[in-house]
Length: 252
Ligand code: ADE
Image (cartoon, rainbow, N blue to C red; front, side, top):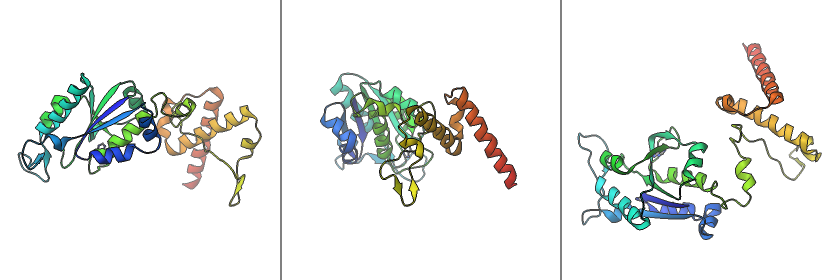
């Protein structure tokens, strides 16, 4: 898969993604990340790409010309018009499902804004998807772009060592992941749960599913309405909810 990032800070994108798992996938040729510097397409000798907003207000707005020219350089190079994702706090919230959809693309262009945003006409011309990584405001779209690229990349075949791990992850069946343990068996008076030491696969699987359900109920109850549970697990969840409600009424 090929990512094309339009940005004023190309080095930030390259430094961030050329390490660890994405770095290895780039080395292996499974992924490529090209960071296109929007400033290279400035239309004046000062290489300025922003200006004051019409109508007044704080901050500067990125001009449409350099953004569209940077995009054109990508379409001309790859010979097609890829989807263009604009990273913005005003976008649709990024989800695992979105990542799965984007991972099907061969080329994905990602546009990073700065200052007070980008002239709306450039966005109307080139953007196909508006995406936010959360309800908070960052100084630019580079970190959100890296978050999104990281998440999409691990779904591309061959990027992770074992394809199993992309499956057994948080949000599998809409449940959070169960807790993990490794050696030593006892750490600061805390022991690894007995069941994990038994080698009894069926019991371990049941325990892990129960822990996933407990954790999801505690931290992300909103996910449970779409969770995939069998009959016994539904009963287990109902019992947990009953206990939780009992505790809450005792507190009152
Ligand atoms: N740019 C600034 N904040 C952002 C956010 N939360 N998501 C995506 N892009 C952004």
